[in-house]
Length: 112
Length: 115
Image (cartoon, rainbow over all chains, first blue to last red; front, side, top):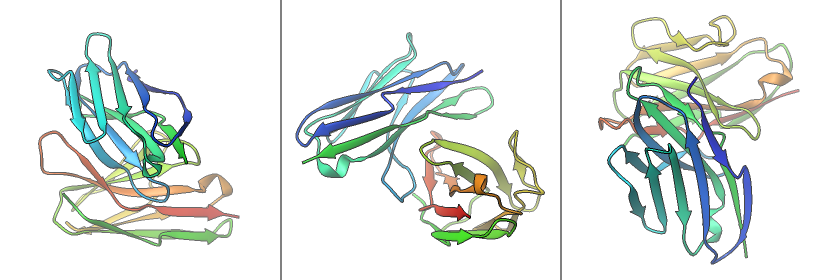
């Protein structure tokens, strides 16, 4: 069964600090992996997509990594801001039925 | 990208009643997706709404409980029928972007509280 596990479930950091969110998956065959940011009371918005051949991709202060061998991805947030407070959801697409598997999300709170 | 409008944004309902959520997209799309997000949880796909045919429901979700309409390529409704407190959730409408990578675009969600 395809699964996506995220850790930690929740995280509190001080403004200006860095943090790393983890995503482990068992989805096979793998097509791509997306990180979404969901602000409170809003729908998720895509931050970045990782395909099989990509190891690292940056989007401003967000840097995603992918290790397709170990089936792990991480999302690193640099110099956190209060506006980074949100849930971050890892979503993996398979290459067979084109199905999506959602992770449980990491709830990040950035405090001043 | 796609702009998706959902309404109501939130509602408080009594047990046993039904509520219909509307979803409007600013462009024509073949498939529209309805998700449920229970408190503190991630998203679970309820069904895929196809224009001109019956919606396709995921395991654990049935048409009698969550009837869906898809009258045209830009609009869909999801009804939550005979509600119980367990139906208290955020319901999200979504469409897939035009790129081959399948980015999802979401509405703001409809937060439903059942008393």
